[in-house]
Structures are given as C-alpha cells and as structure tokens.
Image (cartoon, rainbow, N blue to C red; front, side):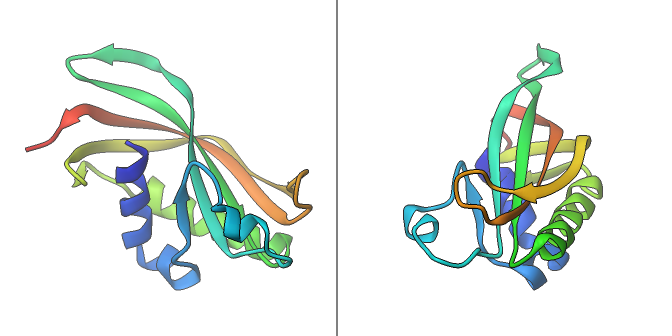
Amino acid sequence: MIGALRSFVLADPGVSAATTNVYAGSLPRSVQEGSSPPTAVILRRAGGGSLGQTNNFGDKRVDVDCYGANEKAASDLFDAVYAALKGMGTVVENQVLLHWAICVADGTSGHDPQTTWPVCVGTFQVLASEVAAL
C-alpha cells in the first residue's frame, strides 16, 4: 500500500511542483549523508487503523514526514501532501485500490532529532484494498 500511496502523491501536481523526492520507508542513505536538508517526503507505515480488516481491505496509519530548507518550506510541502491526500477519491495505483485518506494528526513542525533538518510530520489513516485491484 505504501508504494501505491507514493505513486499517488508523486502524481499530484501540487506535490510534484515542490519535489520529486518521495520515498517509502526512509530517506536513502545518500540523502541522509548530505550536509543540507533535502526537499523530500517520506511515507512510512505507522500501524493498524481503527476499522480492522474485512472483505480483503482495511485501514492503515501512515506517517508523513516532509523535509525542507527551513520550517516554512517543510510545512508548505506538508500542506501540498495534505491537499493531495485529502482530495483522494477511490483510485487504483500500482494495482492497489485506494479508497480514502484522513488526517488523524495534523502537521507539526520541528527539527529531525538525528539530522537537525527542518521537518513537518503528520499521520493519515488510509483505507486500501489488501489484494491487487483488477
């Protein structure tokens, strides 16, 4: 599901205007070793949702970390991702049926404790199929 969500976010004009660096799981090591903050989005699993699983679909929580040159840039990037996910209707991405995304923890700005880079983080609940869509 994270790969499908990554494809959906990358295809959004608001997000792609700000960055083409959308990663699943974590920043690549080459980016982590850089001296300046990237403009990047990380989508990673954050546990199960509240609906459980029925009929081959279920909801999952997804953490969204948005990095930028400063806190405003990171926050603006989060706002673009937020708008993309909030506007998501039922869509097929990478053979996964995505139904909806709801923000359950709005963007909070700060600095990554490991890199000290500016970051804005939030959490979404996403309903998606657990089997490949036809």
